[in-house]
Length: 107
Image 1: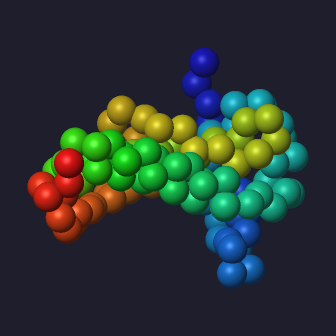
Image 2: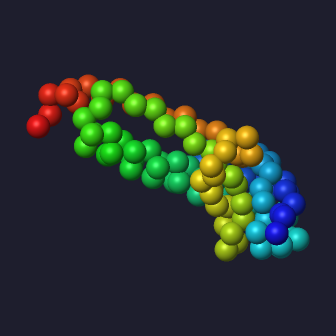
């Protein structure tokens, strides 16, 4: 099923608002009238970053980078970030980089 993108208002953590295009997976025509919390997207990015950082620490790498795309959609009435395979259709392209000092010194 093809979902039509819709513009929705999103509240940032500092109180500012912006419009983003999302895929409405629920077919709710009233989503344009609502304000969604962007923190749902940032929590997803923080969770991915924390998991990857732990992986890199365990692998004892000194430097690493991860790039991924996120698609914004409305699911269960919330703004949701979905990890996608290709960055060409991503709503957000995210690059996380780490320099881990002392990684080779750990036992």
